[in-house]
Amino acid sequence: MMTGVLTPLRLYDTAQRKVVDFNPKPEVTFYLCGITPYDATHLGHAATYVIYDVLERRLQQRGHTTRLVRNITDVDDDILRAARRRGVHHLDLAFGGVRQFDVDMEALGNLAPWREPRATGAIPEIRGLIHKLLDKQAAYVVDGTVFFDVSSAPDFGKLSGLSSDAMVRIGAERGEEPGDPRKRNPLDSVLWVPSGADEPAWDAPWGRGRPGWHVECSALALRYLGSPVDLHGGGTDLIYPHHECSAAQVEAATGQPLADHWMHQAMVVHEGEKMSKSLGNLVFVADLLRCHDPMALRLLLLSHHYRRSWSWDPRLLTTADDRLKRWRAAKNNTESPTLVGQIGALLDDDLDAPGALAVIDQAVTQGQGAKTAAACLGVVL
Image (tube, rainbow, N blue to C red; front, side, top):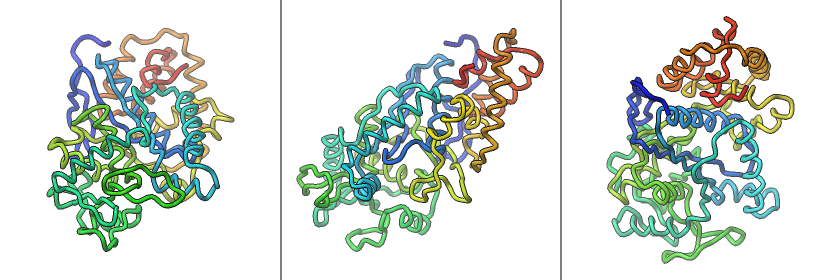
């Protein structure tokens, strides 16, 4: 715990579209969208989870306790399609993916989440949330499919700032099926869907089936943290439709916002496109760690500001390897008593990790050590 007068911690808020003071209570609650575990951890995943780890560490340094919930989406359209293609059970596929993800996160030095629940472990809560939405006439049933009624959220779109036309277009690209004739509004989202013959299914009053993706996170956030959580986020690709829909569902059901603050990590680009499973242009953490120190990979990720997209280039990791060697060569030198404070001030300024790396570089060049300062970033020398 740090003592003395601290400058405000300022973070960009996606909903407000500006950097604002982040003033949580002594105990800070986070909800971070986790993986759909049908592929190992790629650099886009790692960038998101490392910067959240730096934020959590900084909050702890400032005297807060933290409760971070990071879910596992072990049932949705994507993982079911992947399991079908590979001829395996979706839970077997998820087990292998989660195991590799945990190994990768530990190697990168990330703190373990307070809770890491699976969507399949919250079916009663998901059904309960859908019940509330139906009771409040914020949802409707058509042929066993339950849709969220976007007309119950008059300010729908406030998180993303997108127009209705833009949301329809992006939703069509991301599996929302705005042209489904059963929908009252193209922006209505699926809460519950009948399961196919080879898909998992649970009983519900409106028909046997499985939950939609957005309601899984809504229910898990409410189950473990209540509403509003202090901070909610993930990658920028989740802003719409996932986070927009999850937030609208919680607010319609509870009358409370899902989150007080929204934080999103920019995309990592490879081969001219965002790094994603659907495009298949992935660079996997496990592959990189076969030849490189995990702390070098952490330094590579922190060398880019979380709100700026960047392109993968293998030469970036060579640069990070060299930086790590310089820092480790100087780790036993005397460390300036002001260095940790400088790092903290930069992190308080919208998590300026690249600025923090530059300050440590300068200290090392001047013959100082930086072991304690590096630890503020989760880098072990």
